[in-house]
Length: 219
Length: 412
Image (cartoon, rainbow over all chains, first blue to last red; front, side, top):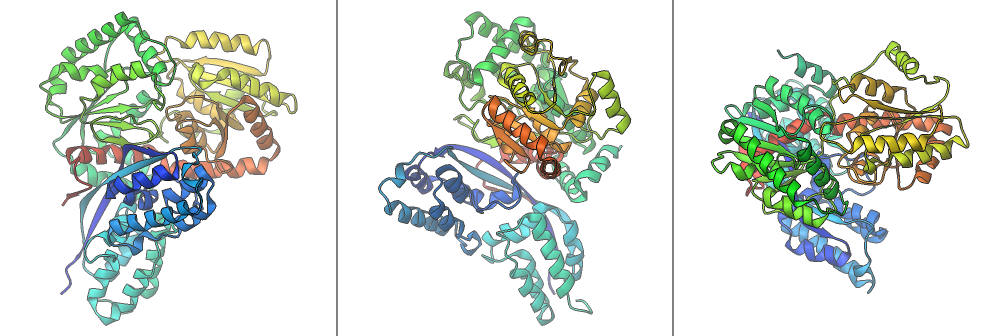
């Protein structure tokens, strides 16, 4: 018997760290010491704060390197880092620093070029709360998803990856508990790549997957 | 009386309102107080006029109090405001001492209320020193800074910092503004209220009335800057931009602003702008009462383009209002305007009157671009800068401050 799905919600709040960088050298130095929540915020926080359309680059580091330093090669390399592949934020930090150092090694001048604007390091706190909603079947979950807050979508699909079972979203994990009939649905959910879309688009994709792949007959 | 929330639900969607209800439920039993210096004029009062009723409708025990002060006090806080935004001059000692006395008097007057509150939001520098006089306070005290303190005149910031460092947290509109303090510095951009008189939809008759009342020609384009008459808003630069445009295309300019009770410098700047405009019948300089929101709404709506050519700006709520009305904004490349005006999408960022003139000419010529940018502007505000998002962040902040050492706060 699978436990009912507990719908939770979350709200993320940004906190200024007072740390900033003007050059690549400063960015590298600060990256070594900033808290993990700072790395998390600059990769995922963009989903929950103002931004316009789909920016060319998906994380704040790549955006600053492009806009502030006009260093397109580095911006492209940084933008390629997919944070959902890193279960441990320290591994993500390590990858970021590796890419940065590789670029710094390519030119003696690069680390000291002053950007047109500062990069401000921001961290975040996430407040998670229980909506008290319980859903017994994948069909009920599918019906509820279009009405979920974007905070709930973020919590269950993005934030879930840094909780056990590591690297997996809550929806596919829960649905997979309903046996073989629902294996395809679970697989399709886990295939959704959340990195290049807004939370509204993510909610729409989830809605579509549930509509198409919930097996006839139900749980 | 659920009417207010239902009206917002029509605009932002059920999911957004449900989330607010969930957060509010968790604050049951908490008493929250907001303190600022005026109930009329300025963006802070506008936001509080809506946030407070919304919080109440959500069942949160909230009150809003203002401090009282005389002209010397407001002279001092205006100087503080200007120097924190970068003007370099010292505030006379006698004014600073008076600032402290007025804060002490207000703390005495509100002592019972403030000492018992669970959360106290103090808005801007005017009431910031009250905290010193309330050592028996039991709740969390949060200083909300609405102004651009990215390059403050250091002696004045250091003076104010001695009071602000005693707070449990501070809130800033942008990370660029946050100064180093020994407590968490939260980042919350402000917002507008789509249901307020300043932003509510108006019918064609009301717009026609505005043309007649202000003697405007409906056949020629209108460009408008709505803001206090304040040097940081660069109204003289706007007049210059208008003149540069008029050399090429017929256009009318409106410069309209309300005074605020805590802004003694406004009249002086207003007179300078009048002189600069001379007797040009197409320049309309309007000094409006601070609560004449329907007029401001109509002026924004009959405009083709809105300007906000500030050289310093906290956030720039007039920009948000204009974007919400589907108007592209040509704004100064500073402060919160950068967060709202996305070049080529919701308007243009400019650095000079010449830059503003160029973009005005472009948009008046390329009408299809003007329309397209206006539509994008409205959706951008709907998703990011309405009061419901602002309120959610204030509620989230209360939990965050109570658990400041945790990255993840589980209220399960």
